[in-house]
Amino acid sequence: MKHNRFTILLLCVITLLNLSCEEKKVNNNNVQTSIVTALNPASDKENKEGWVLNEEISDEFEGTEIDTTKWFVEGLNGDYYIWKGRAPSQFVPHNVRVEDGKLKLRTAWEPDYNFYEESYSDGNMGTSKYGEYKGEPMPVTTAAVISKKRFLNGYMEVKSKVGNAAITGAFWAIGYEQELDVYELMGNPKKEGNIRADSYLATGHDWSPPAERPTAVFNHTEDLPYRTADEFHVYGAEWGVDFLKLFIDGKMVHHFTQDDVGLDWVLNNPMEVWLDSEIFFWLGMPHKEELPVDFEIEYMRVWQKPSDNLLEKDRAFYGFEGPILYEENPRPLTMVPEDSNANDYQKFWLFDETSSKYLTIVEGDYATGVNSLKFSGYGKNENLEADKISALTPKGAINISAGDYKISMKVWLDQGRIADKIHMAFQNPRLEIEFDNLKDLPRRQWVTIEKTINKLEASSKEDQLLIEIRKEDLPKTKAAKLFIDDIAIFKNN
Image 1 (cartoon, one colour):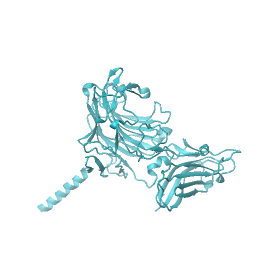
Image 2 (cartoon, one colour):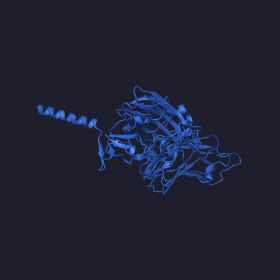
Image 3 (tube, one colour):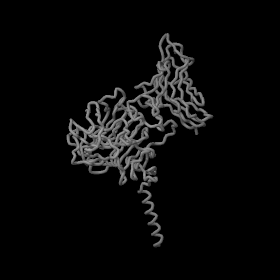
Image 4 (cartoon, helix red, strand yellow):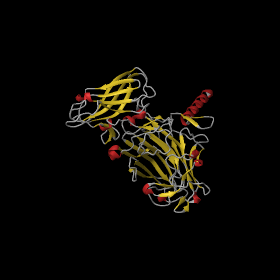
């Protein structure tokens, strides 16, 4: 009996340890490389929603140094991404530390630091030199890290505590033409303003050109029953296709929807995560005597829900919201959210000169997001100036193996004489797809159309997807406009 009781007790202890411990795998450099996916969001502790941890972007901050395969460190090797910090403070790499199972972003008073001889201007938020404020020395160094991967929709969460000084701790994210500040907190502001020691500020920003302040399109302030510099708390945001839910310690504190803000719903493209500290001089300057302080993050985790759509990762691009990302290539260091220039990291739909007269990406007519692809049609005594017009993805945008698939898209057809067919094709190797009998579809509403295809060969490295409208399928005069949105591909069972 004693032996059996001991065995049962031992099994219970092992089970409890397995349930409570967060298993972490560490490489020879003592830097975390993998996380067990049994961890659940504080907002859904039983994981009733079916969340899956995105290990590429999540981090438990174990070991003795930041994992630079996951994080870009501002100032490391002299490289800065987008900016050097909110002057007069400057991001410096030596303020990024991993110890005691936490990421610690330090803010320090460093009169001997060699600050950059330049100023930072932030629209109506003011201009200042690094290391100097109103002609007087302000030698404050801070820190920032940015995830190297982006993600589209999901739940992001940190457990953190800010430093007890007039310096922010911020958990935020940016993507193409958009920004989400999950929180901006300040441990000990010196002036009354939009953030207190016991409050929380979340904001969405629209960075579409012209990217000039004011850019905020929605925000939420939450009064807290604690000082943010005194205790660790869990902060999260569930980001859906058309909603945003904000959580503190697993409790939802606010819920935005696209219906609330209309076309100001900017959260439509993949985002990267930022963790940083900044001076907000309108809330007062940190005092020399209260530095150094640390913004401490116990973990940063991102969960997403699985999808059968093989284009899910690039769903924003195939919904005409923004660029497709080639994340195997580094982001250009000067690439700001409002940058619409194609480069090795981001590329856009391609239109030749004639096609661009008829096919355009437009805002305001959409199935999801805020954009769609519009065929403008033409009026009386007009006709298509070419035998066909097209929109084409960049090379390498599509990567589908051989097999049987269902390809779909949403269309909105205006009243009147309409194109009877929309053609689509994989380019390399060539496989043509024809969506026909459009004239029989309901008008002035979004309708999903689909085709079953058999792909005999896998996509090459340079495969592209083509959308084409042909003159032969159009009425001779007065062709009605149509819209295309949300292209998707599913494996046929």
